[in-house]
Length: 264
Ligand SMILES: [Zn+2]
Image (cartoon, rainbow, N blue to C red; front, top):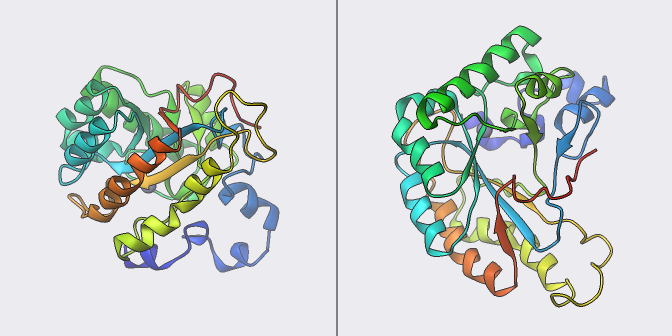
């Protein structure tokens, strides 16, 4: 866990040789959020004003209920990529996420680094998580996010065989790092900066480079320990949600963000 917090998320668990450029193409395809090498991947919403907030590694009884309340207060819908083992521990909470109008996705059963998992193990990880979600919520997840963002050559197609599309992100501010909330608030600033640069609603076409909206990756849980403290994530959202609304951003789930899919 300490290792995960200290390291750049792109490099977690990648052997030094790969991280340093040996088989560089493979490493790029596995870890870069926009890399399309290993299958179709969703990395942005289809309109600049649509912001998809996503949470990984829950459900977390210590944080998720407070987070659901916060999202309700700001009429924000989000997408939660759940870890199967935690869904089994808190099935009611997984169900509650859906009842409140959010979307749940698959984030594997045990949160392994799929870069090192063969096809069989990958299949089992995805299937068991979907089973846990299905038992808790009576819904089958349609979206998949690989732990640590690592993909292997087969993970995208395995997800597709379970009728799930792979979702990465455009912004991952690093809310797992033991830093003050102010640090996290600052790291989330690019969303507001992009929104400020947009033309007024209904006026002209989107400016260059702003034709898509952000998919923000935050964490309401910790894959390494249950009941993790994610108060700083809540604080940062308390700060930004009203400001994002004032800037005209619309909070969408991954499903809502894909009128026209943004993918490779
Ligand atoms: Zn995760």
